[in-house]
Length: 105
Image 1 (cartoon, helix red, strand yellow):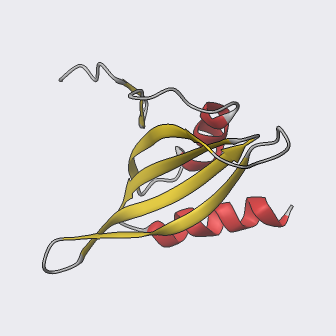
Image 2 (cartoon, helix red, strand yellow):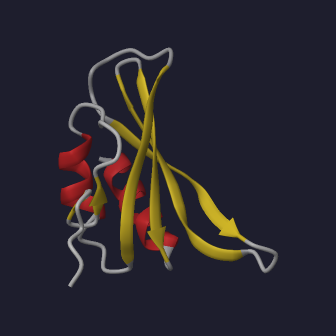
């Protein structure tokens, strides 16, 4: 079995993550069975207020001429930091439902 050097479970450890994002991904997104890989993007500075983490569903990701569905994007915001999260899954609707349930609370 190959060693997954830059992965912690399903979460790729390529970039740093905004405050509390790791806990959120481990608790809510990683347990979804259809999720294969979670890749946080680079952190960008935006115009935000507050320190609470807020994660929203972005869009589905299609690839190739046949427009094959390969995953979805999530957007995380904490304070004035923004970060995109790429989720590799064959069922982005499950991810969307989890995010919507969390945001209703």
